[in-house]
Image (cartoon, rainbow, N blue to C red; front, side, top):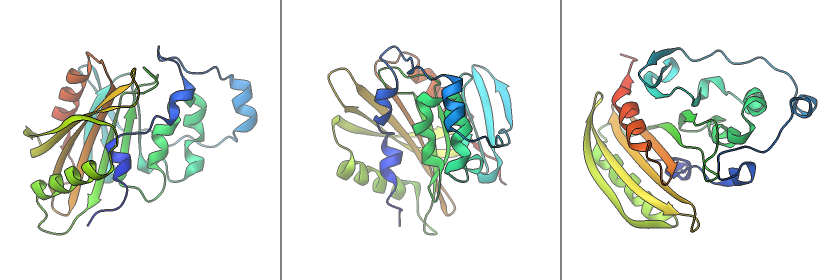
Length: 232
């Protein structure tokens, strides 16, 4: 029923570690150096957005949803990144976090990515929205069970139990999965999945951060409460 792409949804890899230090600073990149190696191209049309408390509410019209993230975060949809060439401008402006947006390229369930503009403990706090086609009649509980089983079989370094719960959002009842992963003595990531099925589409909102992060609860609460379907 599901594409073999959930490794992306579980948590974005730490391949960006070499790009920054523990204070969230990226490696030095001069505009001249980048211009010489990166051909020019047209910027994508910006996503429609509305200012809200603490951030921007982005509308992803192509996929029929809207979601809010902190004001400083960089956000792109898959419609803005149709091929690898389309992320070159982003790599010039935000070289430290460009790896997070490469998930949008190609035939991927990832439809929207928003990430903090700098690294903290070699990781950028981020949101990934995935949409997968499922068989008619699939329930949110079934989708959550499949996701839970896939986490158990593919996610390395999970610390403790995977916590499972229910939540009520504007889109209706959702299932929530929360867990932590340890990559070193200094780097522990927390990931939260908010999962639901609407017709023959299954949605996953995945939030990840490096701990400790005293702002994470508030960011996730505001963002999930803002999420709505707009296609109908």
